[in-house]
Length: 637
Image (cartoon, rainbow, N blue to C red; front, side):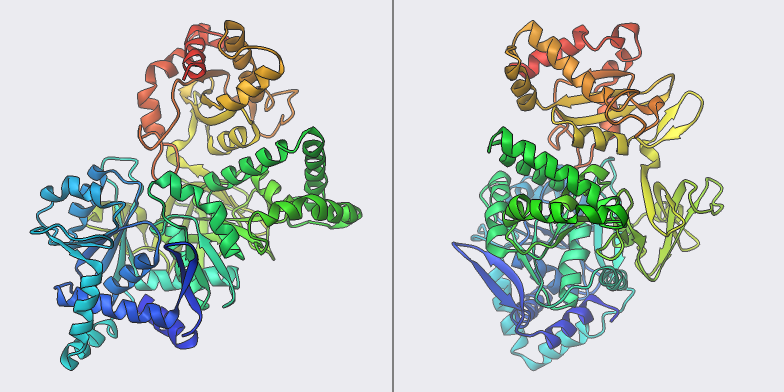
């Protein structure tokens, strides 16, 4: 099995009547079998061929996750063409760059995303056709309805000569043919187009299945965007391999409405496993804790005690219930029955675990979800590797790690001179295998810099432990650099502070060869106000501003000497001075990208004067005019 076409055809043959996709368009979910999806792919693919889509052409795909998304991608591939999956979070200008750069001939777009395309369509003369999934095409435009393309495909296949031509194309797709051009998240002005071949995908699907054995009765709710490389491989195609089912979230009229549909959809689908990224895991935890708090002080205390016992029982994952921990089992089982099982019921009752990816996951979050009985098995990867490189799994788990490297992939850690380092020493993670991309589209320079002698240089710092677990420390480009040249990744500290502090919403540390590290923070005003109210202090008073700043400082001080989390991180890399920012990091202000990662360069540029202030004597005291001004703004917003 060396192409996605072969993967799909084999699964249809093995599991023709298994539900492949579940979709909720009205009041309930409706399944479509593998055989039904195949028929839709044939008709739509033949329609695309009749409209001139041929081998090597590029076609954009801009839509929320739904049946038409996968049908569209497969149909493009059946024509021998290349799909260009596009994030629904992109702005019109970002779409324009990707469509121009890829040389897209067509684009398939949903009603919810069509307005963005309308803004730029006149600036894209090479885009010959726009296929709209919903609604009626505008007269005299380049638009054509999805259903009309399907009808053209039916008519096309009714002619034996055409049918033979269509079959000849998809039956001769080669492993090295490019299947997708997936663009990097766009933290720079020129995001790169990652060329992933059919073979890249099929190898990574087999690698993923080697970590996690999925059975045909499995079903998942695809909560991540379908263009996301992690969801693309680990969800859509890995489930396809085993004849399992994927359900899409019911699309609302707005992104917020779609997000609000998730809890209800989980109850309806009752997924066995789900894909998660840190941002999603954090939201799940916040909602769980909010629900517990609403039940009163006694329940909250009982819940926290149950967590403490479960944390002790689970250890670091690999030693769960071993040695003296076995004595805690009766207590763990009791708490599971009276508390944790009720929390799991909110996930449908069948959820066994999450598969985590997308970014580093704080160890505290791993402990939390393991304690409530739905562990997050964290992995590591990047789109250039299709994307899975390593993963924890039920048989092999170690909190804080990114698991063991998948089969059929070589991985080593090298220094700046490309010399391999021994176990335990930190350096750059590089990998070599069939899942490594073909290169960057129309960018041979970046390709040659990233792939050297077949080895993909990830740009991530990490180390391999003696027991084979991979630890990822963060991006080299985001490292803190002390005035003595020593380097440290800030991401673990930032994640820990945000995850473990209820009053800090976002954080970014900074040190560019300075005497000490500083930090900029976004407060969680709802929680701060709650704490001030308990103390009888108005959040809109001078006393309130001062107290709020003291509370924020106390949260960070917990990681320093004498604090609750002392020795978790080297103190020199903890912020000596703190700045409260007047606004949050969002996609709208470009301080967060479409994968919900902060864009350090943009933040540093936007708040350059504020960061400069942090290295002045006045900033040593957190109660300073700049922070007071920010607290006033937050309190009155």
